Image (cartoon, rainbow, N blue to C red; front, side, top):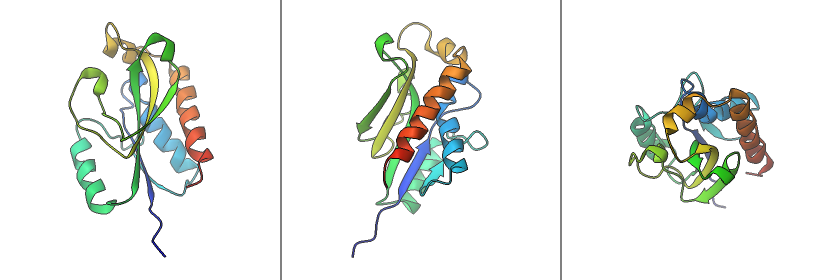
Length: 148
């Protein structure tokens, strides 16, 4: 019988910027709920552009063959703000700012927190904390509804 793969949630973002705090909020809530998965990225230990490389190495070392689900806030079209998008092949952290950090994960969950137009950093800094919390709760509800 083949060993069941582990599920690994990698929650990207920084609590220092409201609109980018979604990932750490999700990670914290998943840990509180004791999900049957590995969870990386919380408000106390965020995964950001500064330490992403180290987490990639750790994932390649300890979670090779596991299912990695990357979660991040992103910018999108105005009509998509407030929606969640689930994609195969992971996601590109910091993609809204065109930083080529490469893909992360096997599955990507993106919460669209603002419009990909104008001053995106300003949008992230001035996002409504209650809106970001609601989106984070939606992501958590989605993740705990899946049987893994």
